[in-house]
Image (cartoon, rainbow, N blue to C red; front, side):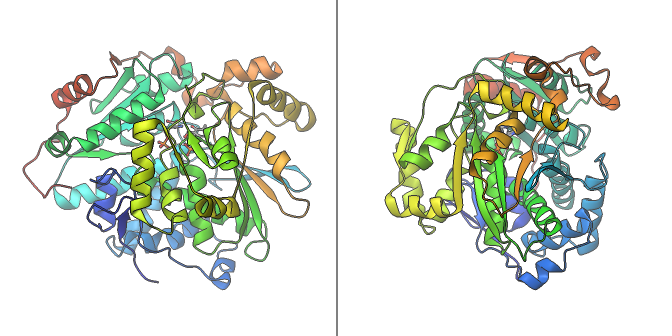
Length: 474
Ligand SMILES: Cc1ncc(COP(=O)(O)O)c(C=O)c1O
Ligand SMILES: N[C@@H](CCOP(=O)(O)O)C(=O)O
């Protein structure tokens, strides 16, 4: 199988190998890295994945992306260690909820959200790359609630990294906040930004675009702007499809969507040869992606606070990766769209690209009442308890499923992360698992900060130990 290197969606940054793309995060031209070509798996090769463990499948699917830069045994050991932190042997088990409807549970990792799947591997990959180079890095991340906790858990206490997580003050669930603010590790810093998630994400991107700061602290990112995050999420589309009869049968997936990372991983799986029928984007009332697929215009509105706070997003970063594909990899068209987004909070996709997107994707939204009703009804009819994000997926999936094609909804978080919304929907107070039972009694440590680049950079500059003389700029 051929190895791949990585190119930027904006076409003006150098192409990079795997470890460089991993440590770089956002490309220097403001774009996102994607593989130069998609590794291909034949039906025969996909069929051969049947009966294999999640870890074995991960090794097979992900190896080509590492570009021959990590010895096989080392990579395999990293995968085993990363998924050894999960509390379910299947890592991403399937639960049948209807004749042809399934839920893929992605919340069996340490912080109870799908982010753990990629983050546990990412931390080990970064450690490996930094160790080999004798470097340290300053990790920054923006979170609407789940990425932050997962990143802090995965990077806490790691020698070669300091991690700074920006979360919107007062806009994450109490459990999510505690997962970020109660770490006792000295390399962890939680910053409560007086703004919303988009402000946090804009600050992270602005830090990457400040070349002097970026080089000074040796900035790396853990959001899904980092290709390695998307890469690790491709695996569960393969494990699920083969469990349901793929590749000899097409499967559809519905994905609760905000930053478009998780569903883009599904698109990658399809490009790699996995027969996927529909990829359904499910949004909450912050429905920019649903509107975009309907109208062909990406048009930002103010963010609303909902019971699914992790999806309260307007700037859906990874949509840029899809645009790059839909424009036939014409980076100049991506640059024009992103410039228009910056100047006038929107852009027209264009009819050809829109047609290409609609070939692979469907989209739907769930309002607040529908979310609560889906949690209540699903529990009453099947005994299954959904979190609000997963409920959005289940609601939209019902509208988009086809009679003979299995529809898999990604359950992206454990209901105990959002107890208030779950209890108000169905009267059940979901308990945290035992290892987190004392979470709400742990002492918090965080810094409230204004949504200003200078304030954030000053804080990070003071606390980061990433400055080094070793190695070239990345
Ligand atoms: C629980 C949950 N569901 C869904 C999403 C949306 O995923 P993505 O941003 O990859 O679209 C998020 C945040 O990313 C999340 O935390
Ligand atoms: N919903 C996310 C937002 C950030 O997404 P990412 O996948 O780009 O890290 C969160 O929970 O933080």
